[in-house]
Image (cartoon, rainbow over all chains, first blue to last red; front, side, top):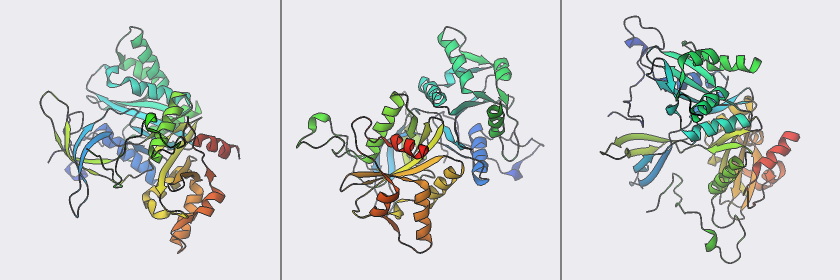
Amino acid sequence: MNIRYPNGRKYSKPQKETTAKKGIEYGKRGMTLEEDLNSTNDYYLRQGIAVIHKKPTPVQIVQVDYPKRSSAVIKEAYFRQPSTTDYNGVYKGYYIDFEAKETKNKTSFPLGNFHEHQINHIRGVLAQAGLAFIIIRFSHTDEIFLLEGRFLLEFWNRMLDGGRKSISKEEIEKVGYCLPIGYQPRIDYLKIIDRILQS
Amino acid sequence: MNIRYPNGRKYSKPQKETTAKKGIEYGKRGMTLEEDLNSTNDYYLRQGIAVIHKKPTPVQIVQVDYPKRSSAVIKEAYFRQPSTTDYNGVYKGYYIDFEAKETKNKTSFPLGNFHEHQINHIRGVLAQAGLAFIIIRFSHTDEIFLLEGRFLLEFWNRMLDGGRKSISKEEIEKVGYCLPIGYQPRIDYLKIIDRILQS
C-alpha cells in the first residue's frame, strides 16, 4: 500500500545502494530533500555532533478505536497546518531551527511555499537569538542552498511592500550558501552554520 | 465523542471560567499539566519571552482517503513512540528541552514514566550544552516540580545499578525546584531557568 503525504506526492522508499545504475551520482537517486535531511540528522546524532529532529506531522485526531488485545487504531484524523518550522534542535549550545522546501522552478523560489505563521515563527526565533534558516532545493538541477532567516524576512517584507512574490535564484546564490551533496552526512549544513557563527 | 490519548486517559475539555465552583483556586480546576504548559508557552510566545512548543503526537499513517472536493482524511494510523521529549524551543539564545509527566503516586515518581530513548535524548541535549529538564506533577496534591536533566540521569543510573526504580518525593524536593501555579503564566518555569542560569 502506498502512503500519501499531505503534499499529495507518492511515498517512495529510499533506493538501496545496489539498485544504483547508470553511474548516477551519490545523493541524486530520487531521495527527497526530507530523506536527505533525516539521514543527515541521524548522522549528526549518532556521531554526537548535534541533536536535531524533524517534528512529527501535526494531525488532528477525531476517532480512535481500541480493539481488544491490540493497540489503539486511529480511524479518523486530519492533517493540520504546522505552526512552526519542521526541524529544530541543539548544536554546541545553539538553538537550530529550519524549514526545508523543494521547488520545481528553475529561476526562482516562490515565497508562497511559506505560511505566514512560519515566517512569524522564524522572526520569533531570531528575536530569541536562535539560528533560523531555510534549506531550499531546486529539484531540476538538484542544487541545495541554505538561506539565513534574516534574508528570508527581507524578501518576505519586499513582497508585502508590493514587490516580487519570489526570491530569484541569483539572489539566493548571492546571499545564501550552496550546500554540496555528500555521502555522510548527505547535506552537511552545520558546516555552513559554523561559517555563519565565525563571521 | 470522546477522544482518547495513548495514555488511555479520557480527554476532558478545559473547564470554562464560568464553571468554577466551590472557590477552587486558579489552575486547580482539572486542567492537565499539558494544558497548563501549553497555556504557559502561549503566554511566553505572545509576550515575546520565548518560543517553545509542544511537538505533535507522532503518528504512523497507513491509509489516507482523498474524497472529492474535500481535504484528505486519514483512515488508518497508529500512535508511535516519541523518540524525543515533548517540548522544545529557544529562550534568550538557550536551547530549552523538557518532558512533562504526571503521577498519582504520593511519595515518589516512578522512573518507568520515561523510555530509554527519552533518557538518551536528554543526555544528548546536555552534551550539546542545551538546557534539558523534566516537569513533574504530583496530581493528588497538585504540586509541580522542575528537575534538571543531570539529576534525572543520576537517578536513572542508580536504577540501572540495581537501585530503586523511582525518585522519592524528598529527593525531588531536595534537588528540584517547586513551581507555583499562577494565573498568567500558569507554570512560570522560565523563572526557575533564570535561577539555574545565574547559579
